[in-house]
Amino acid sequence: MKFLEEEIALANRLRELGLPWEPSVGNYVWDANNFCKQRSPFQTGVYFILNYAYFMRLVGGPERFKDIMVWLPTWADLRSILREFGCKDDWVAKHIQESKAIESGQERVVLYELALAELKKRTWKSVTDIP
Image (tube, rainbow, N blue to C red):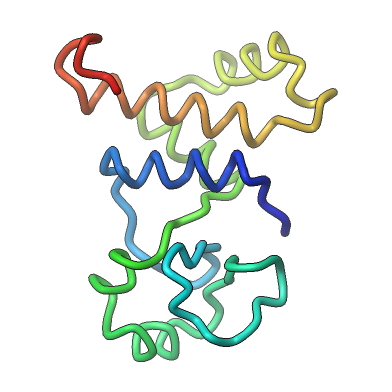
């Protein structure tokens, strides 16, 4: 799995706006603070949680893990997030098609952007509050 810099930046923005997340096996994370000294098998700073107990012990538990790591939702995670926000599958598919995301290889970026827009609707009280 490879994440674009834009996806990592969008994932960090989702985190800043308070997207709820509980670390679990199967999650990809970005080590924003260079905490992990072991080289990543994916790309610099990107790790996959396979051994949950190891990761939690390494960083000092789930809360500390959430403080120092950024969750990198996958395509399936993003679709699930959008469904939880009440976005219908046909609406998401139409948006992906209209943005030509598949042709440009930007489908996951578009899903991140949609999730961010939906999260902002829930987080900020007015349009003028949105940074």
